Length: 623
Image (cartoon, rainbow, N blue to C red):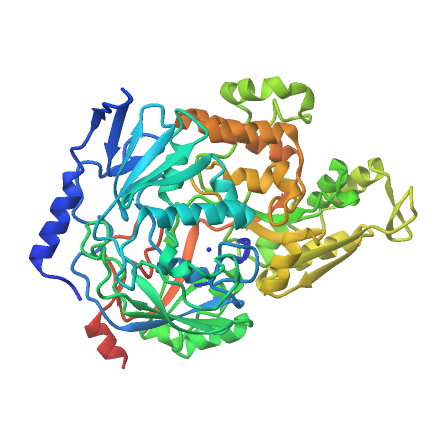
């Protein structure tokens, strides 16, 4: 399944009834566990099988299976999916190399999220978690039945090794999540303790709950930081069956998967074999789908969706085309400046360049009116700023009043808007005025620096052909005001290296956040991360941004966190660190009619392939 091109190219045989009863009973044993006094310390200890950063999980009182699965779904069959780009490593922990987007299918975590809830987690490898009222530490109790694919048990020391590997050698983005996790300790084989640098904050516990184990007995004598193509030993519902570097990777369902009878796994992972074929040409990829070589496709091109799906297979029902509303929170998508380059350090230059981005004309001519303009760093969510600042947001921002840009405290941020004609002279005049204020002037159709006499040059870098197509009008508009502007299309590995090295003027990307937003914001926007390769590649260094990120991370309740993210959002927007582009509040999918689906999809995902299955009757008709 392709990623959206405003997303970095980056990171899924039944037993008898008695086995299910045993698994269900052991699962439900934890439901009524509340809190107890620790005789050694006098602390009140909470013991739970399901947790949430704010409030209570929806299924805290019981679960037989997720409401968005069919617990009796058929198992079996094989499918082929596609991905864009390439891969040369299976190690996503470190910066080196490109890994498959699908690699998460082979891993298990201590706890697993619900696709119907924003921040709820339920015990997977961990059957329960214990923590004191001040949340300064947490102990995860590992299920005795949890095991790797070689049959060896999952032990606490494996998580200690995993955390230490991340902290010592992990890529900055992953490291940023674990900043508040001070250490991990194996108290016993199946009792794992994390100590946190914070108190009265649930977020670090939920972060620790998302850790996957690295089996010590497998990695002993190996370098876990080296890029490699040897399928790792893992414990998840799938394992890697075969691969051809850069071209394909095949996963097979683990039929004796240790967790398959747990309520949180019933009805999931129904397809026996999933193969991903990699393409570097989007047209070839689409032709492969039309030819029946690919079973499922998520479309990200408005042009293709609106003009190229007039297929006989859709007419005869062998291919299903659907537009699925999406409630999934998004992050900022668009064009990100490199503030490490002097020419972008002047706010007026960044604002002038953003002014020349004519979304209304692009929406009309290239996007078929199908997208929404991004006007926040947290679109499609409850965390972004809307309208004028609220009293609560003003209260957060007021201590920084002397460091804020005009408008931040009293106005709504609205991206420049044109009449959609593609010839709106108002935006051109405004851009020229801003450039002149910043020391640049249009002379002989060239934007010239009054200080050096050199023409302003700008290269926009992308790793996705569709982004190149939709950015062309923007580049042409920049040329109209005398900028020597161009687009550079690179492959995924070049894109990654150049972003990590801050070797770009503007780059096309999307900053996903993980609701509720938290420590990942440091990696995207924090000053300290700007000094780290692979961190804040845009070079944002703003003490107000740093302070507001910490307020987000330290928020003790949802309302406080939302007010902090909205205040942060305003500061980021008014500083014009990025040119907001657009997003889609629908997911466009097309697939061969050989699948069964649950009665409903999860709230925040489409459910494919984890909740779907191959319908044998339909599949027979497709032969």
